[in-house]
Image 1: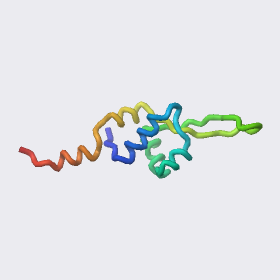
Image 2: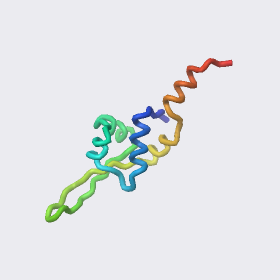
Image 3: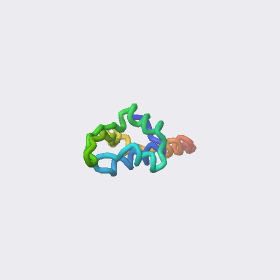
Length: 92
């Protein structure tokens, strides 16, 4: 399992806390970069789901991002920063 840095952990926590996922625009509005989003999706930690909704007389497609089971598992795992700190501790 790949250890998560703080940005990736926070991004996954945001997805985990949103029922039904969030749109890419909301993800970006929280200050996350598109390349972070792309890496979460390509690694299987998040997925993009396309929904069709009606807005008045128009029908539009909206992409929502959701955490995957693998993302939930990674979120429960150890932090990368904690693992690095313990590796730097002197051994007795």
